[in-house]
Image (cartoon, rainbow, N blue to C red; front, side):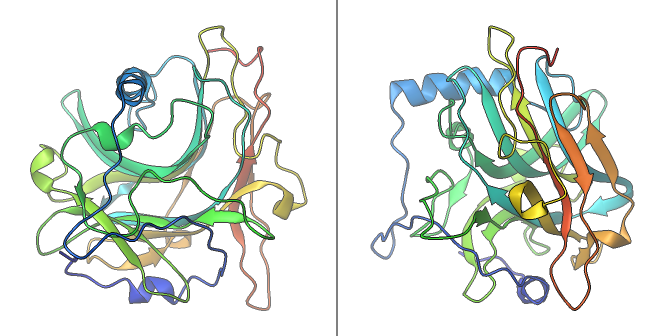
Length: 292
């Protein structure tokens, strides 16, 4: 299956050539499925209970740095370029960056998110949840990022609603190659976001350990004037009411930073001569004095 829409308009706004990934070559008619070990399932259940809800922000021990757009919807998705970094975290911590869509109504929330997570923690719990339909024969959601030969690692995912079916697709956007339709969440899984969402955002998130120590976020350093040395997000595009990808500058973005001692959030510098600009840089070292 393929989505009914095309992301070619989105590709016109993406210039980055960075791409580092591991692909799997499955025969036609088959898709890669992650083996669910007992440890994997246990970790998935553990983090599902502690996981940060971007709509309520009520998860104890969670710290965030990012942006979101709301009250200007409804929305039908978003896409963003995010740098990927190695982090030294323990197994009872979590540190990740993600894009998300969601809505809340009458004390109930529905939301979807995807991105990257530090490898030393509980790891890829999202595919444990039932209902996601894997479509790509080469790229499952839960694969490690390899070390690049040079330069950065980055990922450019999107979550966008198919106008014909209402399903929510996650697609890996690639600047100079064919996009990868990884799979979708059927609209029947949700009781609030079957037609649209009220909020979209991109955020760095950490979850403290049982000892109360907060892990590093982003690349583990506070953002500096040297943006290329910081964890960063760029090319944030939002799917509007007509299912078009629109530049985020057309929306009022709310900044999210709940702890400016352990973590930071800085606006990206404006650039000229058609150079790419970062929407924001973020991150920090964490520690044992970040609070809950």
